[in-house]
Amino acid sequence: MFGEIGLDILLLLALAGFLAGFIDSIAGGGGLVTVPALLLAGFSPVEALGTNKLQGVFGSGSATWSYASAGLVDLRRQLPWALLALLGSIAGALLATVLPGEWLRAALPPMLVLIALYFAFKPDMGDIDRAQRISPFLFGLTMVPLIGFYDGLFGPGAGSFFMLAFVALAGYGVLKATAHTKLLNFSSNLGSLILFAAVGAVSWKVGLVMGAAQFVGARLGARLAMKAGARLIKPLLVATCVVLALRLLLD
Image 1 (cartoon, one colour):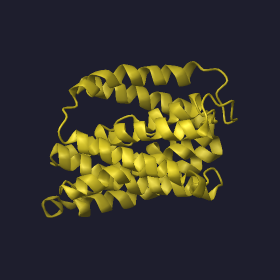
Image 2 (cartoon, rainbow, N blue to C red):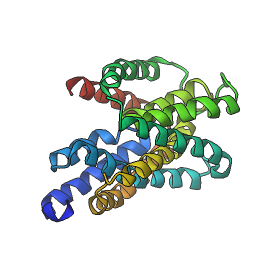
Image 3 (cartoon, rainbow, N blue to C red):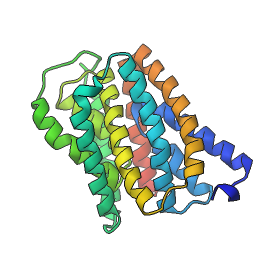
Image 4 (spheres, rainbow, N blue to C red):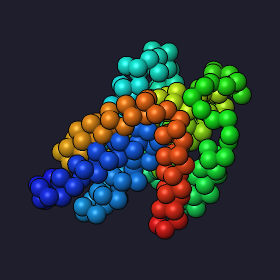
C-alpha cells in the first residue's frame, strides 16, 4: 500500500498522526483523526483499524513514557493491570472478527454524551485524589480487562471509559487518571495490534511513518497536560466525547 501512496498523501497522514498523538495524550480520541484519514487515503476498513493500532502504540507509548518520567505512573506496580488490558483487548479483537459491531455503534453515542456530562458538571473535579469506590484489586480485575476487551472489539472512546473509571471508581485526580489511562491504552493497543498483525491487516510502512509523527505529538501533548492539569484535560475530554458521539451518529 505504501508504494501506491504519493508523498503528499503520506505527509498528510503523518500530520494526522501528529495531531492524533497530541489530542490522545491529553484526552483520548486520537482515532477520530487517524481512522478517517486512513480511509480517505484508500485503506480498507480492516486495514485502517489495524494500521491505526500500530501508530497508536507509538502515541500511547510516548505519552506513557512522559507521564512515567514525571512520576505520575509507577510502571512496575501497574504491570499486572497493563497485562490484563492487553489480554482483554486480544479477546475483544478475536470476537470482532466474527461479531457485527452495529449494536455497539448504536449504544456508544449516548454513553459518550453521559461521560461528557459527568466531567462537565461534576464540580469538585481536579487533580487531587479522592476516596476510592472499589478496591484497587477489584478495579484491576474487572474494569481494566473489560475496557481493554471493548478497545479490541470496537475501540472508539476506550480512553474516555478508562478516564471515567479511574476518576469515578478509583478516586484518581484528573491528571493522574490521564497518566494511567495512557498506560492501559498502550497495552490494549498492543494487544489489538498483535491480532491484526496475525491476520495481515497492518500496513507497516505507513503505520511506522504515522507512528513516528504521533510519538512527537504525544510527547508535546503530555507535557502540556502536566503543566495545565485539569484546567486543560477536563474541557478537552468533554469536547472529545461530544465530537466522537456526533461522529458515530453521523456514521
